[in-house]
Length: 584
Image (cartoon, rainbow, N blue to C red; front, side, top):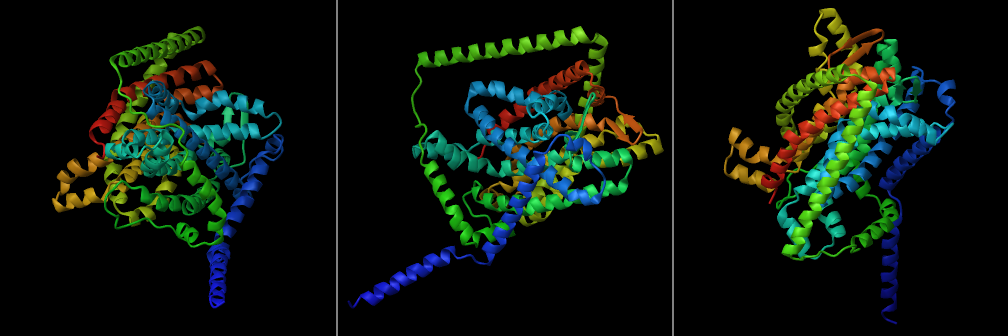
């Protein structure tokens, strides 16, 4: 009986402690208010996407500023739907390519080809398909637009994740195998966390890259089919056709506000959270900060609501889908493995040859050799522009990216600005470029070229920032102890450290530049049009005219150029980075 009051006091304290853990505080109120607002906007936008297709005709896009918030919401939902699809694609395809030697021989060349296919090339064949899936509904056009945005986002994320999986430090991989982790556990506990910094920065770049092609994905014109979805892209297309500088300014302002909002609510918290995945042996002295991340860490009710999800995730981490097998290969098994590889390569060669023969037969039956010569001539002109522009962008943005990446506080301030600049559609600058070229009499073949790199140079910057941000602090301290300076520091420390990230950025920037040539080599402002000789303008004119044979020819030639360029330059650099510049 003597201990009863003490027991009651203990129970009372435990009850009070448990209640305090779930009673909402001011941080819960703010967090739940933001979540509720986002859910309401999501529900409203999703309902609008399922509207009747007749509304696209009866309620066309107008330049009334009152409609701009609605258009901004619709565009943002399409962008995030595409980025979610890109993440799923990245985890599946990049992992398969990194883990399976035979799958890699198919997936990587396929990615080279797919990233070279322009957005307009995908729209040419997908608009009718998606609209046929959802007759009478806007969902068909919405899916076509989302798919087009997806094709401008997925490839650099996939290449980044693939590169990270192939460069996981050997010692960490050996430790994970020594602990007996299954492939499933090793992926989520080692490989995905190691790849997180690069993937996050490439996801931000993909969001910005989606903005670059938002005009083509929302204001769709393929032959006699014209679809204008409510959104900032279609607003910009209408403003450019109407020569309305004020409307263009409103669209740019809306883009800036949107980028700032989703940067603060999503990307900054993710960057701050992912800082714990840095591969290093000493603690980082400077850490990225996010007010949203700090807000969520201080909540009570939100943490309690998320506890069941955390419990489920921890249980999933204990699942052993496959056990590691350390089995020495016999001479016979190695022989069978080599035979299987040769048969697989033979099958790939047969399929590739059949596809090439089919494409050549189609082009020969529909077009003449003059068209082929014109397409290849334009391809060499565009190739020259891509090489020069990538070299110039590398010289400019590699030093800047390293400087930003090594300073988390600077990166925190620069990140929204970099996202905005990367998202800035080149179409907005076309009027100024067209007017300047017409006024000065300059050559479009030269001065339209910079428009190709405006949206794609940021792939280099973002990947270099990711590489510098993930660079281990202990290696920086060693370089400081040995007093490495100037060129010695660049050659022996930083350039090897960021090289795998740079290769990913330059590879995707070159592919993006080929894509951007579609809109950059044929610029217009109202009725004034300027054309630069190249493969991009060839495809753009064929798409606008609904000339499918020439669209196929242009896409085939562009795919050939990009694939050969990647095979001869970027793939050897990938192998060099994997073998010689891995963190071990």
